[in-house]
Image (cartoon, rainbow, N blue to C red):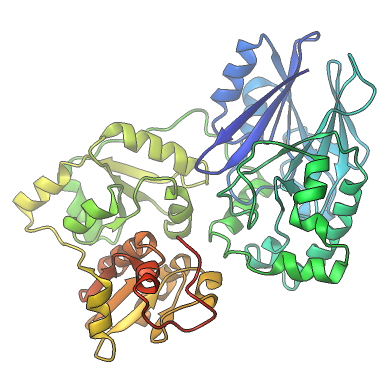
Length: 480
């Protein structure tokens, strides 16, 4: 048996190649849209891609399963569990083989036995891997978003991301029962989860790429709780707000992702196109760092720095139903191409074009000065409290609940685009998060919508707490 793990750092997402050297066949589980990596890996091993499978309908990225199967002619394997509301709408058109509890996929001498493990989602499948060339029992289990290293898949996404009313508790109870089946697996089995630390599909998973059943039974918090009611309470406490694009991902992946037919590179636009686009209300994203954007940017543009959190905030802020545009940083076309690929991973494909970083200099010469984003220190904010200033906290609900400024208003960053009109444009506004990153994005959104008297608290709530200044709530909040 050949097993290769692929890991996308931005999505904190794992996919797997399962191959048989004797038959020369391979199967990919949970591919993302970077399908060339799987094709290249199979070719390097001398394998033919015979199958593509999924553990469930993903919420955090657009699946590459349909694209990879169409590109290679591989058989597509999809879940037929979970009831009619959670079946793949494109399965018949894609001639997919549907899987249920007890189904088996054979990849040469490698056998994948299917377990139905609902809870994170109703249709979720887990695969037990057996190398029949040398064993009559499984060597490991690919758990998708069911069991992670140190955590379990969150059961609240159907309610909080998709809008299924009152689904969180019932899903948590289903998850508890699925975990009892996991307890019955042999402790020596390897566990290969679908995500690592940084994914929003759990609240406390480890960065370990794999584990064992025995290790998880001993040290994963979820298996230390024998009472179902207590498990339900614990698994639902402290779950972060799901990124706003999760609901859109569920829809796309259930109905069927469009076939891209290869990487798409945004066209380079002349600098003179920028002003008419902004005048028409187009969303234009500056990819530079928050520091560079604050020092000077084209009025009306917003800032989503191209870093590890880029797709999280792009998916929450950018439109899926109309075109948007990008401005490069000093890396030029290379960063535009990479950003476009990352955006395609979460279904944001409608990039109308891109501008080079030199558009800032052209703007200065033809349209006037760049806009700056004022920065405020903790002592400066402390001195202004009590006056005509509004403080806006854009952290998560869990962070807010653990401690916040008594005078602050709370809107998580992902919710801000829909509430920009809530604040008078002429009233001084200071925005903060935990360390200054999310609030810098928020300031750019507010400025682009016409708020002029807005500033970013550079060291955020972490700096406020470190200074020993008073907070409301239960404490000083988690670290950024």
